[in-house]
Length: 187
Length: 181
Image (tube, rainbow over all chains, first blue to last red; front, side, top):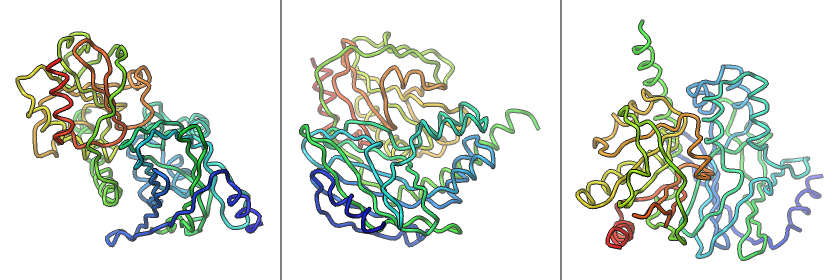
């Protein structure tokens, strides 16, 4: 299955080979993965369960709702246009692959919001949540960048590959962040 | 314990959490950009909100001035990073036909106060409260921070998605060019 998943990823249209670099924050031990390719820079930085929990509890989430989110694999995600032409981003096009799994889309803000409504999370907290997540769609002019949280249903400490997708010049492009790893559960 | 005191404690707690986590995330962020994206002028949506100062601030009342409108929140690390440069920009253009409006999304005054009180400089521009993010939706903001530059005729002429070093010479010059028009 793993081989099949990677094969599917390899067949993505206009995929560009690029190197994934990683660095570790010496203070926190949290790791950042970054790649640059064809005018786009994408980086993922681990957010520990404690950080995710504290952030949302401070925004009005109940302990149970915050725990639900902290149970996911959470990353601070940054996309930056480092080229000289606009790029169009659509998070729904991104796919991640973990061991033994087919490529999966990232859970959308809309899906999360449905869950928070069921859990009676206050509107002010849901507004904060909405704007803290990485935007669903956005056009980045040269120099533009944005950041927000993305979540992956991968066990804490587990690895996955992320295929990120964007449009530029009327064509769809994609790149790969390889062997990204979720923050440890006890981090 | 009275409500105001409870509010301050909650704000300080939030600030501590955000400060700690913000510092972690900010440690490996990309640098702030130094450009604005110029665009064909288009009419700016209405913007009329209550400010942190208790006054109503209306963009329509600022016709004849170039206005920088920044959508932000205290929990957004690049928003926090770029805020001091916005104050420096405001000071650099003091006395000229230029205004800054910082529109906070979804936060209460105590939370904002807790953040601004940590800054080295006192902010000289108003902070508007978009409590239910209606203004952000009207301005079609997809993520924070997002900034617009409105010309003297009330038209959006430039924008910036993501954190900026607002007092960078390139941005200051772009604004001065607009003031002179």
